[in-house]
Length: 474
Image (cartoon, rainbow, N blue to C red; front, side, top):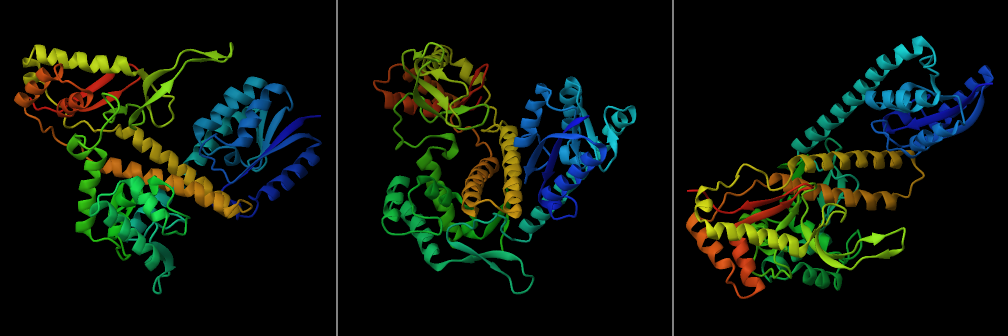
């Protein structure tokens, strides 16, 4: 008697269609097994997961169980239930199923990969499954672009603070409507930052003591920082890093918003590639170092090399490490400081190096490909959350919280993509003077001021360190 594992999957566009629900698939596949006198070893289900990737819990468990010899074949309702990617389909069949002597059986297409005809059909059907997925993605993207160009906000179920959703009386489209209570809070945040020069933390404490929003209180600094950068408040909407004129009413006028952006850049130390004199770093290169993998800023942390087998660890030391996960390249603070100081010493010893140097003005400040790849991943996550919401059975508050985090990261990445790298603004003569005076500076902050003149940023890659200078060639 043949033993089979049943695999079922649904996603948003298919789960309402007849024959595609999880229950319907399971019922038909069980009857199919009864008709062929097959024994069911287990049922693997992925509700609300796209077939575009293999990062699905049930598929991963299925792959793991293939090595345990629990079944002779995998049975699916249709091939595209297993995967809509041609590459992933062939990987599962050739590298997982066939490698363990397991066949793949599709009930609707009526083939078995253990037969010659079934093997031939796999390649053909997987091509069409991927074609359908690509067409769905293209249609959805075009629809979202069209909505943004028409001026409608596409922020999912979470409107920004200061707005609520309302349906238009004409076309019935959902758009943003000003919430007077929250809009007053938004204006106050902009005023506190621009007019009263309060820091993010001070604004947070001030707002937290006085107001609440539909998302809770003002306990997170990130709420303030994102708000001050959000162009939705001047009547614009975005999609895929581009901004369009919106149909909703602005809360902040454009002059105020642009003034806030200039002050924000100075506050964060990013205006024209320099760092604000008000930013007093505790280390020589604090605020100047970026990750070449994900583009995020590096910070200084205490780190030790933990030995799991022995249950002990080495001495703690201060390192520069990426803020994203802390798992990217780490460099001890003395090592990177010495490397940068050594390069400046070379410039001061031979000023002609500065005169011959050319600053790469066309090179982006952040790795654009990495940012776009991350945006793509976030949109896949959005799709999965929408799938889960439509299927039901998932706490809506949990979905809202996860969607809010995704939108916050998307907004930050889109803002980064919009920025172009500023031109170098230090002459060769000024750079020479700065380089020659660096070694004689009496304290840390004086040395940092020199570095801000000479260096645009320092980018850490797995195999090298890139120092981008801030002076023009002559």
